[in-house]
Structure formats: structure tokens, C-alpha cells
Image 1 (cartoon, rainbow, N blue to C red):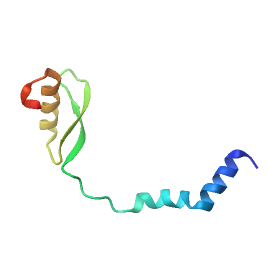
Image 2: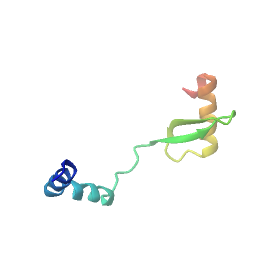
Image 3: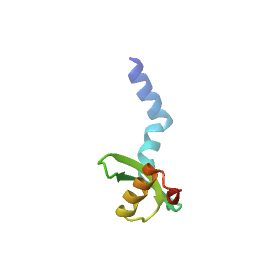
Length: 75
């Protein structure tokens, strides 16, 4: 038996594979008020910023632009 086969057998015998499958089915807790969002900056580059959940994409892009400029109102 190869190491790969042995690993697969051990994973199945301990239920690790089943736990991974069940992980996708479990209910996720609600967001805690913030989320990471992708933003497009004025120069066309991309950034990821943390914003309040439900923020419009226009506001996300504007916040990212302010952060890039270093504007004090972005903090």
C-alpha cells in the first residue's frame, strides 16, 4: 500500500473526510457587521478593504480611494 492510499484510508477511518463534507452543510453564523470587499481604485488597480456589511459598491470603491490617498476621513 502506498503512503497516499494509507493516508486516504486513515482519513476515512477517522471520519475526517465526512467532517469536511458536513462542514459545507452546516449553517453559518450571521456576519458580525463587517466584511472584506474587493474595490476598484481610480487607476484601475484592485484592493480589498474591510467595510460595514451591506455597504454599496460605490462606497466601497470611494473608501478604497480615500485610503490610497491617505485621507484622514477614511480612518
